Image 1 (cartoon, rainbow, N blue to C red):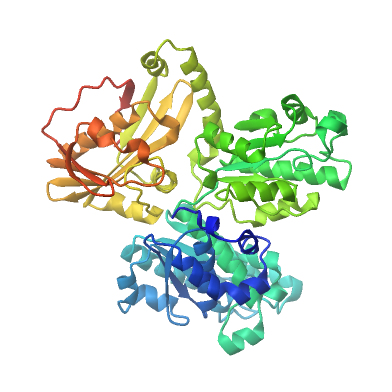
Image 2 (image 1 turned 90 degrees about the vertical axis):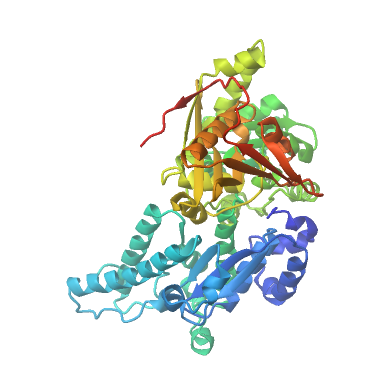
Length: 609
């Protein structure tokens, strides 16, 4: 799943499949586009099951289209009409044979029936809500017990009619009031359950407009729970969540400056002449956009600058008293007169991240076109030509979905700032060994637990360079490994004198008799060449020995970006067992062998109980 399928697509077609969505074009051409995109993909298909409370063919087609557009090969299983409950609890064998990795429950307000009467008691209303929530919880439990799959569940849009009028939102028997209570219960389940992803159908329908959302004629004739255009929006939104669940997430927003983050041209208008803050609609629009970007940064999305400008002028813009963003909010800064594609590639090198993890924000359509043409892996949203609506298009792009938010996400920007301090220390050190010692590193290495699970799954899905096999696993699959006696798992957290790097490495090994086969080993680029890999290997061998393992079998599978680790097993004391024509290799380490002597400059914390 390389996320680069749009390299092969006409730019105009790709734009029509991005927000703002071109409904007529998509409706006319979706079948042909799905066929053509499918033919270009050769990797194994992601297995997605769509279990519906209404007819699901339309939404399944659009989920497939938007995943294929992103380079995700996909195979979709659909339950029979309104058989989501039966498929989950009483599978006839078809769903089990399919063995989904993602399960999407396409239910909606049409599945809330038998509303309490207006004069119902509070007890009976509570019982109605409890029974409906329990019915869904039984579905989630059954699916979780049967499959190592992430579950995506719609909440409910508000009913299209209100028998109580505005009192419907106030009275306990009001349908609007009851819907909000049910949605709150669903949200609480999502907060407390790994691998369970809530799809906010309620927000999506409100944004789309309830009168456009539900088409009674389509429901009566075809049992479509929403209008044909609404299906496109749902497919786009669910596909965005699936992409995030398999690791196709955005990590950086690269921003132009003049007329993008503020109004005016700072080099011509001066600091006092740019527009941001209160005073007029233009200035307030830019201020709101900066506030939105600040919120993205606070949740772990890095910010960078790419501007054709004098460096000093560009930096001065963030000293404006009304500027929400300040210079230290940016993790990379390129302001010069060079071409923007080259500057963006430099930002990618500075942050050690791929272009596929980045979004470019620019008011100028010509600049957007040049960047999109030269860097097709980069996301370049069309933000229109009205500065008061830039935030509208950016927010609706679906580019910033994540299956969950971990503490490491919230600290990511500060982690990159700490990395700058580490680089300065490295440059001041006499030699690399002295530098590593001076970092005063401490590691916690232990089996993956529920606290580490979200970040462990995220790391597996996001890591490309130190990734020995390239395999991806959903959070629910990792949870299955964590709880299974047939697997051994480890995660590593690294701290140093500058701060906490967070969870930076994960290993998943499958037990086969007296052998442990390493199915997945990833490590964050933030800690390359700091001996964390040696500390993880030591922890792995100790864990294997404790569990009666005689031999550890490692695999290297060449991928587009993991050439960095092609010699890792050889350098770590493993013996070559087999090498294939495609340079895939299999290695063995005998637990009885002596570990290669390595002076690891990392203090290992004792494992917690």
